[in-house]
Image (cartoon, rainbow, N blue to C red):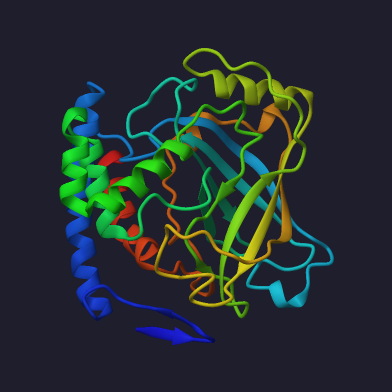
Length: 319
């Protein structure tokens, strides 16, 4: 167990080493899920286990931190007035590429270039909390989702029980919906990360210029809508953070609980125009919450598991 400043991490199995052994097993199981998704898609090659379809890829965005950012929020390169080149990937969450008009969760991944070299990835999805509490539930649900639909409910009940099945199903139903525009979505980290001396935070992107959407139609409709929007002007989001308060209001280990804490805006993400788009290049990139400086390391069971699982997934589709 790691504990500091009123917050703590609790390792599954009683130690970091025992938990890591569990995570390696989860990673192998998620590689099997990845292979099943490839067979479903009729593909000879594996793709990302989840968030397979890149809807929008941007290589020329900028993350600009507020000029009056309080010193309490300064950490690493994230300081008042910093302007950092950023790559953006907006995606559908499904493990198989589907039409943009279908209900789904959406994802936003930022790869921020750091002064002097290195990158800092920030990963988010379009619902405030995870559908699962921990990595064990995540892998179980992913395996069930990759199997026969008719068996999903009884297998879910057998894996997590009736109460958790109802909670997970309700979360997935609310989170998976049609999107009018990826520029109008908000995206949440859902899990906690360190933010230097500020301690644990969750972060969120929210639309700064909510202009009306163009009607979305067709397999790639959300990408078409985003490009049409960029032709009219930049697309901007506000990056905000919320700080850990207590285990009761802002739990570290349970990814299914929405934090009860105020949001503080810290930076603006700007996609300048169509010239910044490069879907093919961005699609080839791997993103992970563990691509970050140590002072921003991910926290909680789900985030700790993502280091092994994301690496295994990337090894499968980048071969």
